[in-house]
Length: 479
Image 1 (tube, one colour):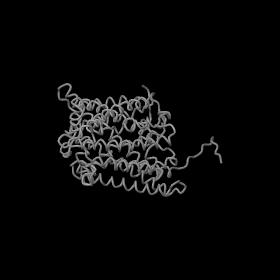
Image 2: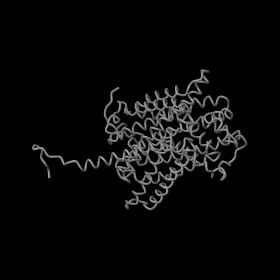
Image 3: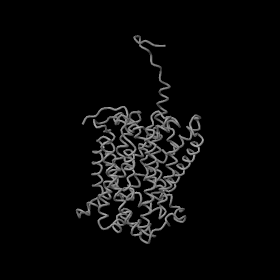
Image 4: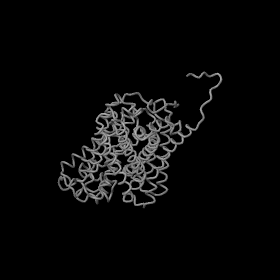
């Protein structure tokens, strides 16, 4: 298949997407089922029975964030991603730095999903074939599938992700009803929301995993160029996604606490990757765990594919802005960026190989360690976006409801700054690697931001120092 050069990712598709299509894409990236078997067990393991509150907290933070930055849209020349807002409020150097930092974050998050697929793929193959299958085999198969599907146009992928999302929601609904009907382990209770379970030192860890589960909401803005009636569609899509993710996962984590009983941390500590499967088997029947693990593989593929497509278009946009090589701006005849997809596949293979060499646990080590730069990068990006909105509204007097927007932007900036501090403080509790290794984990986003900012500053200086072009004798200079 041949490729043609595109000036930017915005030309990859016509404006045909509505609220349902965009919401399907974004929620598929957050993947309810992969959260249920990926982030949720870790949130309960570290955060305890009050972990469900973490999703409510993140829902409120993200809602305030949306109120803060969305009004800037009409003042942004090319509102395609968060870095456009950062550039508008804080300057081009900060915007380009944030662009590369977000690219790194997406790359990190896209790759770590393959480790999770390997864990559950190994479970299925071992159970069906009766032969122990190492996790890296299904992980590499997933990489090949995602890269191949990524070469299709976005409309095909949107329909595919929508169907997968409906199927996984049906399965989670069956398990949820089974737990409710049977009354959990010791009867249904709201003790998970009691102050003694919520206001604990470890609740910060649950909030971090909740935030990680919500990553991908930027794709609502990334798809702006492909949306019908962008102002209305993007606004509605973003609030629908935030409300769904926060409320659904709060409810499901509460149900897991009811199913596990008072010793929820012990249950999920004994087998983090298999605890939800055991709960499904106990409450919904012996068939449930088999169906669930098969569907979670599809769910993880949907999530990886959504991030893959998002990252492809993000890279193409940055190539159009000369922050990446122009090769990343080429697309196939079906409208999919080619070079970005192949680069992602190569990166995933490298991560899997390094995990094998270091003998890392794919769930408790690779999954957490690879996603950490992504979580940190997106936290900082959203902090800068909220700060950019604050600076913009302070400087722009003609904005409607200016005082309210200034206040909301200030609160949003403070909340995200606090989350960044929590990440830094709790990293050792999550990784157990010590301060030096944890510092290395958070350095990649910092380096990416600095690179983007420095390149911008250098270009500005070179432009200022460059001599004015001399007109040729045959040229006419117009006054």
